[in-house]
Each structure stands twice: as C-alpha cells, then as structure tokens.
Image (cartoon, rainbow, N blue to C red; front, top):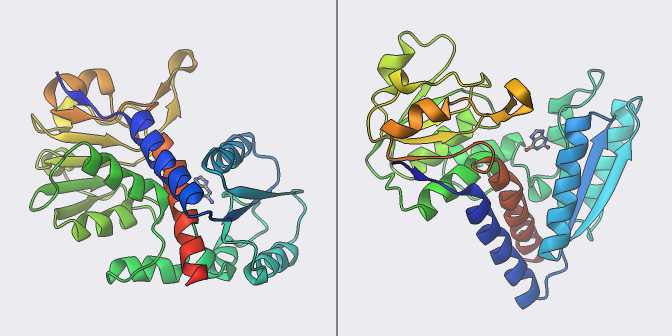
Length: 279
Ligand code: GUN
C-alpha cells in the first residue's frame, strides 16, 4: 500500500504557519490580484486566492478588468501597483486575452513584488542559486516531499514536462536539493525507459491518466501535477492513480495532492514579499 501524500493537510500547515507569522509579527500584507476577462476557471482560482488571503490575515485588492482592456491599460495598472508602497505582491492571473503580450506584462511586474515567480529575474535567480521568488506549484512539490520525509539528496528524479511554470523551475529546485535530475518532454525517445529510472517521478504533461504502471519503477515516489475533468465529471491527474498506486511507495492524489499547495505557497511568497520590502 502506497503512502498517500496529503496535499490538503500539508497546504493547511503551510497556510497556518503564514497566518501565525502574520499575527505574531503584526504584518500588514497586501496582495493585488488582476484578472482580465471572465474565464470561469480563472475566476475560481482568483476567488480561492482571495479566500486564502483572508484566512492568513492578509489583505487582497481585486482588479477585475474587462476582456477589452488594452495592453497599455494593463501595463499602466501594474506600474501603478509597483509604485504603491501599500501593495507587497502583484499577481496577474493567466491566461490573458490574446491581444495582450503575457511576457511583457510579467516583465513589467517589479521582481520585488513578483509573488508568482514568473519574472525573468526571479527565474534567473533560481537557476544560479540566488534569493528570489519561486513559482508556487514547483515550490509546493518540494514542500510535499520534505514534509512527507522523502529524501531527495542523491536520488534520481525524472520530471515529465518542461513548461516555464512547472517543469523547468521544478528541475532547478530538485537540483538545489542535490537530486540527479532528468527532464523529459514530447520529443523524448523511449519515455518509459527514462521514467522507470526515477526514484522520484514528477509528472506535469497535461494528459489525463497518461502515466500507467509501465512507466514507473516499483517503490518510486510519484507526484502528479496534472488536473483534468475526466469521465462522469470526476477529477483526475496525469497519472492513472488506480493503476500506479499499488506499485509505488508514495503518491499524490488528484484532487487533494499538488493542487492545494499552489495557493499555500503563494501565501508564503506574499509574507516573504512583505519581509523584502521592509528590509
Ligand atoms: N494560471 C494558472 N496557474 C496560474 C498561476 O499559478 N499564476 C497565475 N498568475 N496564473 C495562473
């Protein structure tokens, strides 16, 4: 029987630690959240981020802009929030409407307020081991592993997926933990042969139930970053949980695994942002 890595429990611990720090140090922290257009999934994420701010004792400022908002208008708002000393973190919910250049928007956010960790300066700092904000989902995976007692030092870690938000920063974080890291992607030849080497297999490919037991070494730890709505409206991940669970030593479920960690780590980044700006 595999150990089920409980993301609900671990994310609650992280949020409680943030809440305690905010209360104990009397921190006045504000996160500005910008959403452009009315993508329903984004609206749910943004709502959850605001709720988490409330829970941890932080303030949130919400900017719900119409779909027709121009790039110039959005950039002007980001610049205004950069200058606003009462705002410590800025989050622009992605995806943005097609007429707005996402890279340009991300590059306009002050690296000191980049709580998503998407700014090129944050990404660069991570890759050379300097302080900076780390993308919340991969940072959450590290917390899941650490708080579940999974040893990373010297172990084989295979990451499937090379996105800027998950796969690439995940590789940098696992290197920081002294794992031996391999990143696979759609051009990888004989994917199964590579994933079967993993002591720790992290999957972020966006394909429902793609990873079956043929891809996994017996006793491995499997982290599933995917989330999809499958048959009968049921949520599932990139890993076929029922097929893989019996052969591994530990696995994250979907839902209740990696998902809740993203917002918990965002809260953590907001507390850090306050610290940086007070320094
Ligand atoms: N859209 C989906 N995930 C994220 C995230 O972590 N941050 C932002 N800003 N947008 C997203």
